[in-house]
Image 1: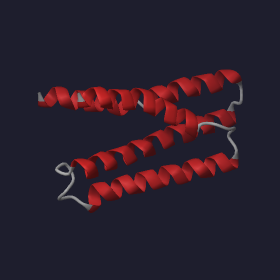
Image 2: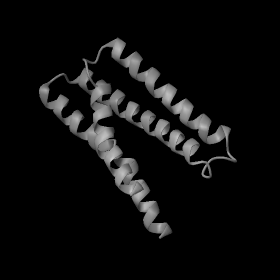
Image 3: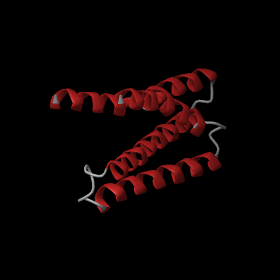
Image 4: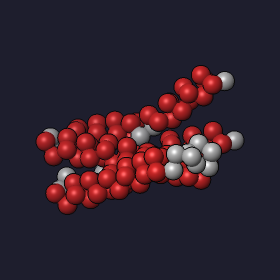
Length: 121
């Protein structure tokens, strides 16, 4: 059951988050917003991971929250890269390709989780 919930979160929530972060044009304000979002997510996730080593892996809330923040940082990096490409090449074709590739990139952690699950089972 938990894998189904994670699957829905990753394959629906990830692309929707990427889309929300990529809204607007590649302006300096958008880059600052993405940089701040990415930095806050990554710092929070890594603080939860390395600031509480005894609880990591045994406390589901702390571990899940930390992984979610790290994943948010990953989505922020993808959105930042997409905006950078859109700034260099402003055509509709680039906008579409970055939207497709960025949305697909948000699902990469699922494949890592599935692979790790196969190794453990």
